[in-house]
Amino acid sequence: MANRITIEVTRYDPAQDEKPRFDSFEVPLRKEWVVLDALNYIKDHLDGSLTFRWSCRMGVCGSCGMTVNGVPKLTCATFLSDYAPGPVRVEPMKNFPVLKDLVVDTSDFLVKLEKSKPWIIRKVEKPLDEEYFQTPEQLEAYKQYSMCINCMLCYAACPVYGLDPLFT
Ligand code: SF4
Ligand code: FES
Image (cartoon, rainbow, N blue to C red; front, side, top):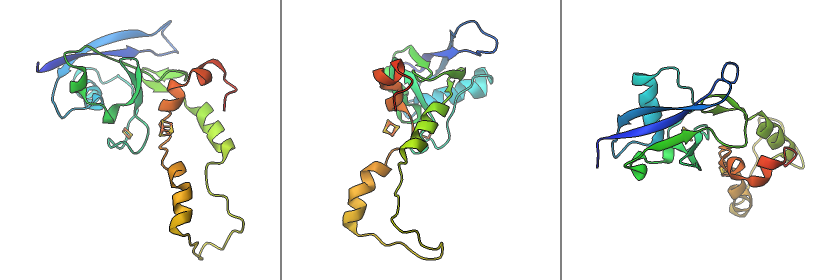
């Protein structure tokens, strides 16, 4: 395996640029590195102005979604070595307006999320100092719906959402 790989990243500032462009960077290719490590290497060593979101580095926070070689991916869970010998193209998630470089505006999703009320709505609310109990069966019934990390990769992949802004 070569020890370097080329990353092509979208650069775009809608306030200044007419259209997006790609910048290329050579980064170390380490077998334990994910695509997010490569972006952080660029930010720390090559171009501090590269703009992208991330937080947990462990597939939990849902903030590092991007398009990697055309496919929506969590960049903290996508190994760089899977794309060797490269180049690897990293773009913002599709179907969302770009705020800068790899960061998209997710406001539309958040408004729709709140409208759909994806939480347990109780028949009777108790005072804050009282507990609610649930059976394993009740947990099983809703658990799958609580596993979404709001990464929006499915919105980025959805052809209907991309065409129809009224899609909920
Ligand atoms: S359902 Fe969509 S937003 Fe939720 S975790 Fe899966 S891909 Fe991400
Ligand atoms: S950084 Fe949190 S899910 Fe990737």
